[in-house]
Image 1 (cartoon, rainbow over the protein chains, first blue to last red):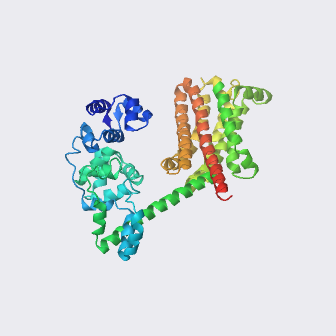
Image 2: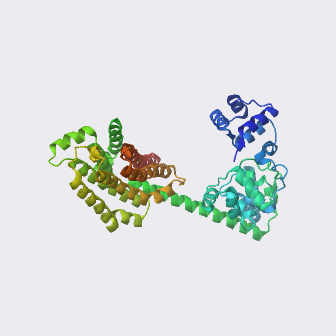
Image 3: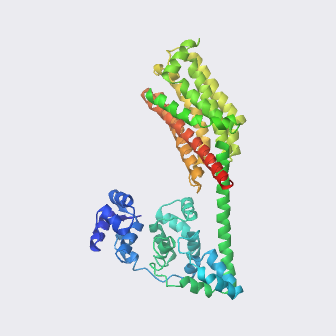
Length: 244
Length: 236
């Protein structure tokens, strides 16, 4: 779900941004056709709101909370659960930690080039949903958003869910409402209220067993992705060779 | 009338891209099916149909021949699409024993009806005598076979719509639309049984369906050519 264009225009006037599509697009650095199309359609997507908020130095969460669709967002923003933080640690980050513990010189060698991957990460949505799942999150989410479970699974596999659905998932999981938006890449981790260095802290405090489990889980996820990619490539090749 | 010619031109242009590969013996079945579909649609363009029908001893036999060629083209294309999507059961239903029985049954019934009503004026699909219920059955039955093939392949092609591979997705989209239109054409044919005036809309739908299927096959062709060139560039 997006926000109403009329409400968005009203919000723009409160933060001294132009309401016309072209000047607005220039001011917030988005494609003017995209902005114009959304304003004409009467619904503005969340990334446009976030871009506008960033352009004027307003917190994106506060900006989204100005709209009825996200009224509770800022009020129910909480620090992330440790398990959520771990869900956004990639295979590379976990492996670096594993190697660093084996031999500190690895850590020294990697430190200058190490960059923490920000969401959206490959399979990041699935990892987050699995982490915060109280036991029935997929079924309940599918019911609440009126989507068939297979379609929801397809969205999770594609690592693409609508912002409103991400918020709904967070609500079901009883975690910070902003976490899903951060995991989906709509807002940054910092904008979602995640403390600076939260992932580094969580990773360095993992027990050896838990770190091995994490690496194993990420490796299994990467293997699933690689297998899927190989199957898709083989299918494309077969179609081209048979019909082409 | 103009739409009919336009459809043939587009189908012929897409079929021509196959010629170099077919000459080298590559995917001959798909090339033959493309050629068959072009010939079938070409035969029913007004001028070609009129001239050939004047020369033939049996009135409207050109229409029956066009249908046989079209069905054969669809049989070949359907078989290859089923193979491309690795669907052996569907492939058997198209070109195995079941498929052959369906093909023959539809065509034999067409021939029987044709034998009864073929001399009711010279026109494609015997369309100038649509007031006759038997002519309407003849026309509608001809759309059942394409719908049968499309119905079998649709679930497989649908899976390709969500493929992360752009070429698979593009091929699937065109084929999916083409197959949906083929089924819609059959539905329109059923409507024609009771409302003959819908016949001409149905004919346009047939042509558009054929264009989408041809575009789907052409997309696979260009994807393969593109991949081969990319590979050549990498290793040269």
